[in-house]
Length: 383
Image (cartoon, rainbow, N blue to C red):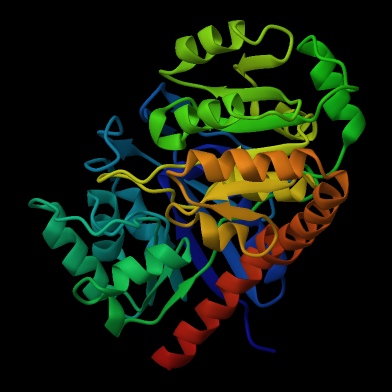
């Protein structure tokens, strides 16, 4: 009987146990055929605060810790010298969850033995001109790679137009969602509403989940709600620079708008289940467009109808399970909101379709199997 293939997956994000969900699902889906090892920093500073490596007792994938240096910058941090040994000992494939243009991505490519296929992943859906040394890092990593994973169809389309990418095997795979944690749970949603001083009975709740910033479409959402003649209430969950603006706006709609910040990840499913529909009116800018829209997949999993703009990856995430609207057309948003608020039957239909989409496309086991199938393809090409 052949030995299981050994997969090593490396990422700075693995310092947080929740971000190792993909690795653990790879281990579950590949049980008997693959042995999965995650390599994570012992500590990582990141953008907001220092993080120490989190460990969980129920993890299936093996966890190895290495040092990370200069981790205040995602572009210039590097791993410690222990990384080399983890990439060399009987490894069949290395998966790098680091962008190919950052120094850590270059480091993984340099330390992976030539005989071992390297697959990197990317969420970059804008074609950018990188300065030195990042441009050279990207060229080297792409040239070294045996394949690459795009976190979305728009990412794949953009990167295939860049030098070297199209000559390597590639696949677009969406991010995953935990469909057991994110699931329909109306009682939890009603309890969340009461905590915010809203009764479950009353006009439908229009929801928003995410950063309070203009590029996420917060001004357009306020404008669209202002234009409604249909009764509505709103629950805006997140945080960011526009919080004061939102609270001022909410004060003009006393009794029917709540702005909620500081919601821990464990309570996000409760917040979603408090909504009757979710709006994601993301707006494309010269430097940003929506890369996936995690809140859309999470809302689908909770059975919440979704309205999303046509920015970036949103149309691919939503598919035929929700409504895709022009990102800058406030009148179209107001009209679509009115129709959906006035039709409980349509909301139930979209809720069912969304939950089905979450189970068949975004559930972590589905995402993990797609990765393993691609890894098998890469190894077959290599052989």
